[in-house]
Length: 312
Image 1: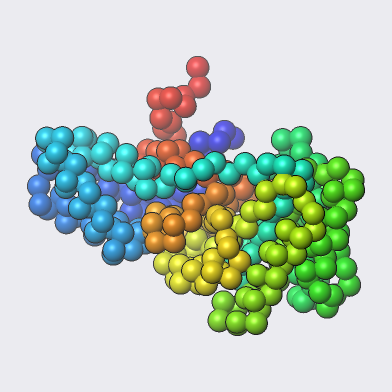
Image 2: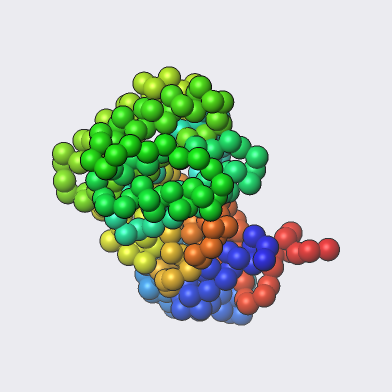
């Protein structure tokens, strides 16, 4: 299954429930006030959020007026461009240096451990030498679960005894990666309740320790959010960002919800780009996030592909 086909299948619930209706705008002969009202309602139903939905509709109104657009097809094309622009990251996600470090954070149950395994498989498939760090030393069997994913991805893992200092695990993993010439260290952390200040402070400590371990590479911190929770994930995310200087989002379970519009709200409200999306349970079902492919997949019909992605 190709990249775009897999993304389209993962977004099927969102598209069928909400964005398919917005796509019908293409058939409108003219743009009216009712068009904007209907669009606002559909965006809110897609879990874009009222504030962001209103912002998008206002921007579309302004663009329609400025560019003298008349038909629904023209308005839909303009909307898609607005969405792509809103979702664009300021810089690509491409951790450089050796070793680069990716800290993966988030509350229990969002798919953090599985995302780490899938991320390891993705980078190992690109020829990078990847090492995992079992930094969740508090939850029973956390290291064992991560070891299963490490084995699936075919990468080694550093672990300490249950109850050990998580920061020491990260330090040892980074030090080992330096000594053994690994390209990338991906670090698990304990699932945190976002209202526990002491645990959030510990995340800050882990970030500092990773830097002090001596790695010359970039350090990225990815926050895992569950797409099923939609808008409810945003307040939770804001506190993680403050504590651990998060640089991006992994959005899991996108295939299991009609709330795919939350991707738009997350970027707009948090200022953090979505870096990866989970669209299935397989080890190859974590995909780098591409705004244009995402927007195209939201609006295209079943089996369709954008013109620039069709196979020859």
